[in-house]
Image (cartoon, rainbow, N blue to C red; front, side, top):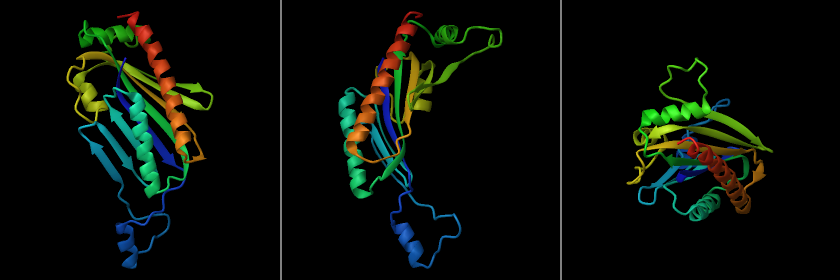
Length: 225
């Protein structure tokens, strides 16, 4: 299967208490926080159209994503290096949750989209009469792996839908027009103080789990296509 996107998402256990220009001006002018409400704070978003990666940092979370990944190991190195830059500027502290997300496609060039949807539905949603008028379908399932949860989402798709719903950057030329789409997300309740080696371990193990799941999905669907 072809990797369309890899993404790392981290949630912070405590909201970062960094002084920003906006907050400094607010306090300098005599502003005070009333009750639970805090002044709105801007985050930071960086994106590279050329290399097809983006990163965002907010007061309670951050994420880093790459699209059209040819070398996933280099992608992981970049994720870790980017996190280190963020941590040196604003310490990430205790992480309450980690998620690793991957998008894959399985080309199905000999089918049009309508026929592919029918084959997908026949495989995952047996016709009980309830869905006899269905014109589209997808499968959403969550699976437990020790303390981790793997979220599965799949369905038949074409380029316009992929670009609209699941892509930040422009789709690479030569991408098959019709395909089966698979999204896998591994979620872990981390509750550990940020250390690069722990995040590297989480990324590698999560990717291995996603890759194993995508291989199983491919084997099932190739037996149908």
